[in-house]
Amino acid sequence: MKSPFKMLKLFPYLLLLFIFQCTTIGFHETKVREGISFGENANFRVCILHEPNITGEEIQNLFLAWNEELSLYNLKAEPIVLEEMERPGFWGTDILSYLMTLPLTKNCDRLVYLKGRTWGDIAFEVLTLGIFAGVGVKLEVQGAVEGRSNTRGYIKAKYISTIQILFTSPKSTLIHEGYHLLGCGHQLFMKECYEKIRDVKLLLTNPDRDPNFFPNITTTGRKILNRTQVPIFPSKD
Ligand SMILES: [Zn+2]
Image (cartoon, rainbow, N blue to C red; front, side):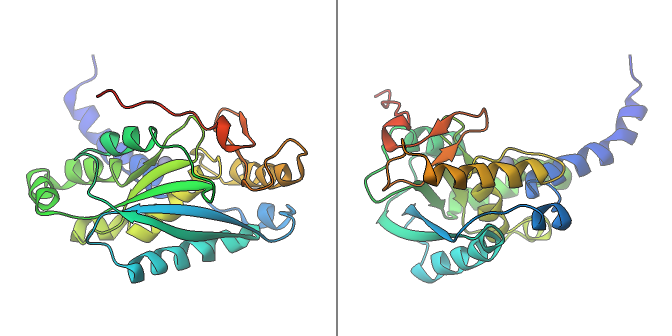
């Protein structure tokens, strides 16, 4: 059995690993990226559902940051605000399972729910404020993308906790989840993700693609060429 002291010594490294995993999709490899052709400029439409306390200006700013990152791949995300709605549940998993009951409507290539910050969240943050444990728990719930089609996800779009801001922000969360929306998983270095984005863009010329849909490749390699390939899970109640 490992002695508790050994585990304690390991803890900072585990924490570091965890933070890297959650705040970055991988380390950029500029040389590798510059060697890959990402083809012509292409846009995709990201439909937005958002909690009432999130403003249009905040949404624009989030997309400005995301699009700066996407320009590396000659890509641009266009936000289309569908509606304002209360969050479907307190936990991220509630939001994600709700999103999975929604089909992508005809002007949407992706669907993102922007979660705000309520008094309930603040109470929860205070309760989990065991610094390190707190950081771990909170980073875990900054956002997520469903893995069945990689087209729907949520991010926590508003938070001001000082501990959180040290490691992450709504903008970096959107950029991170944005990579998942383009089929990327987590990796230490970005090469694999660059290739994934290149392959997704190559699907734009696939004759089987719905010309009104921006395609995707899931983390497991399944091609999503039209909206009927996006699985819908009926809600349980
Ligand atoms: Zn992630």
